Length: 447
Image (spheres, rainbow, N blue to C red):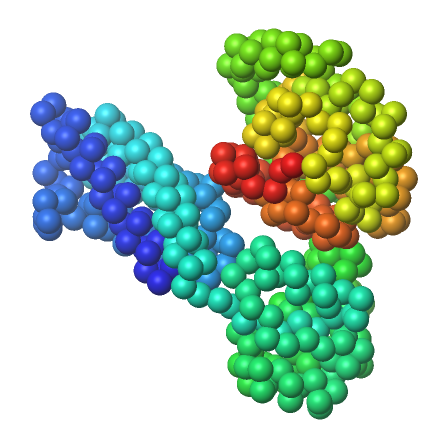
């Protein structure tokens, strides 16, 4: 249903963009007759060729699969743009004397990108709510005994999952565990810390033989190895691991995007800044802004800026609340008594984070990246947690759009940071920014 819904959504979006472009241009710059071979449903053959290629490319790049790729809106926009640019080049080689109307071309191009991205966002939201009410994905969990309860609660709370069975990781390759899984007949097996059996886990191959997919939760070591490029060296299979995380021009583009968006954002938000400052000053004694030392790139300490959402002496009161902390590394307390009246609203809407645009301008932070954490939290890090300090911290990131404060185990949050570092791209940053806007508007996971 998701695949069909997205296909229909894309066809509708592209059709709407072409109807718009033709309506705006038909009186003074219509499509040249040499490029209209036939017409169907009032749209020329050129459109039907474009839509066939676009849908085919979307399918090839996995934008119709039952995975998170369906939400890769940046990739969808890029593919639409590439199709239009290819059409422009091919039209010249088809007949150099035919001048494709520029107003028609650019209107169709830009409106196609906008309509496709918008329709996909709406379709994904509608399908999510429909699936949430109608479908439950059955999951069988294989993990360490200490993790079974927390993983079960997390999967059932934050996704469309129903846990139909569990097994201890140490018994993953036993006949009893395999029979238990087959009897439960789950849609997927969710596995963590499966012991090795010679070169690989036999559980994977046995599940494959009965057609049950397996989803692995990788360890920190596994995620680091995924950066490697498979190569045969001196007749030995190896993984070549590159030393740089964000190399080349992509990083320069990321920094340029940071500077542009933060500058425009600060200029646009000045009236909002003034309004928030007045409300904070009128409702609570103390400064307007809250500054705190956080750990940034390469472990360098810097001052992060936020609107103050707690009483002025909140840092000195934190020690009294440590016993109520709900996280193994981070300091997270629901109904924190230190929060001022307007603070709940600012934190729920994430408006308290807006001053960090100044940190972005200063080069201390990026728009997207692992969240910078206080010295108190980083002191409790495991060694592999510090990998997140190899890139600029961000205002938002995978952690924020995947649960925010609802993630109780910091190892899960750190894995999201590593996944971001391993798979970073401009498209991923844009996708996270779009998802952040939706999460903030819904107020999910913040307290």
